[in-house]
Each structure stands twice: as structure tokens, then as C-alpha cells.
Length: 80
Image (cartoon, rainbow, N blue to C red):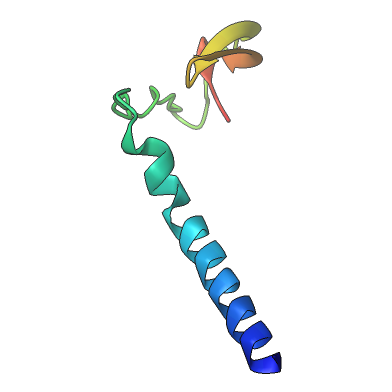
């Protein structure tokens, strides 16, 4: 009986580990949404040691993965 319990615990642990390893692939396997290509934000550079730029912070409604969220953006760009 003790060997059976050890074996069943091993099998359950192995199945849980397998499910956890495969869950990201399974979650996105049927997804038809395409990922947007990443692009770097524009760069602000200093001249002669002086940075002349303006940072505009404003609340914005964004859409992530089909969900609308409110967050702040800088110059219209989301910065996580």
C-alpha cells in the first residue's frame, strides 16, 4: 500500500509539472492574434551637454491583449 501511495504521488507530481510546462504553449496555441512588431521609441539627445526636450505626462486609455486599461503615457508612449 505504501509503494502504491508513493507511486501515485509521483505520477500526480509529474502530471502537474507537465501541465505547468505546457500551459503557455496551450494558452496561445489557438490564438489568432498577431503580435505587433516591437520598435524602439524615439531618442532624445543632448547637444553640448544640454538636453532640451519636453516630457508630457498624460493619462491615457490603452488596449492590451483586448482589454482596456488606464495608464499614464509620456509623450503619448506607454513606458512600463
